[in-house]
Length: 212
Image (cartoon, rainbow, N blue to C red; front, top):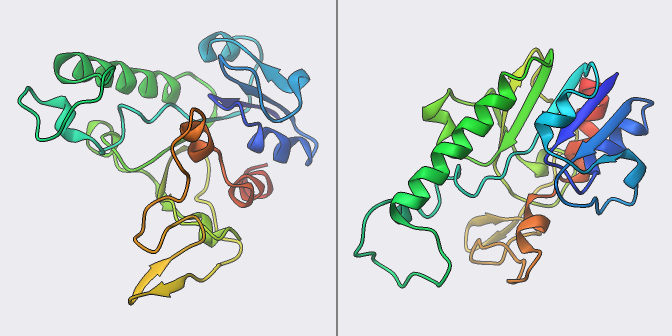
């Protein structure tokens, strides 16, 4: 199959499909970090959509303005916390969310026969529809917790491949990517967002095996 992975610079999914013989390409404005620039389309995703008769596409749109976190920033001041310099708030943030919703819907309606769109729990459940499923990496052989929504078009729900049990801290479940308090272990850095958004290898392998 011809498979496009839009908004993916890590190439995690692209490589999993390549291993199964598919003509797969990642696409992002950024250079790829997966080590295969010959499989990477560094361009606007909608331009990439025009390049081939794609059989399937998996899209990973930026979740910054789609997630339900930081909802306080969409209102008007005064805010309940100190706003960091450079943080988009108020009217500007609301406009950015509308652009993000429009981007999501353009991807879903781009005309490729089989589509999956991945994002955290957020506003698309109300602005569009509820996702077909919410998966966890710990059901795909990964010692991690991260609720991940999948909106599917002409694709089946993913079946879990291997469950990794948590450790128990004060009666609460915690996986390897979490502190005892439940926060993500990744420390602040310039590439923290990219690292957190990277698809877990176990999920990528399941997509390739079950959708490919």
